[in-house]
Length: 119
Image: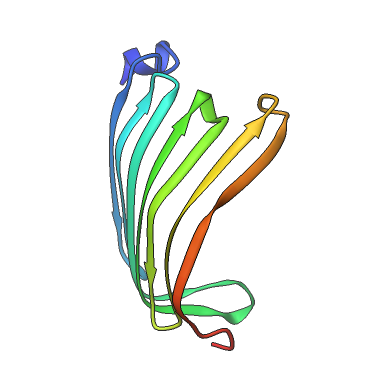
């Protein structure tokens, strides 16, 4: 870990993070560094409170994230979110044209098999 910090993550560093408690669990695993990050994320929650009094019940979510060019390009693939209120899958791609201070471009598809908008 010290070598990775001193080299500013010049070489890939394995990452594994597991958090659990109330209201659920979060797992992040992959590698960071070498100007690239590859991470799998999964989360569960029985009842997750959202802003303005909204909530998601029986949440299961997962995705695969790849970040390249020191954060100038993100690919979020294998998105899968399922709860009592919504279910969707898809992939997103975020690029920043012109460097870190450039113009963001978001593209992708999100498909929903159900969405309860008044929940």
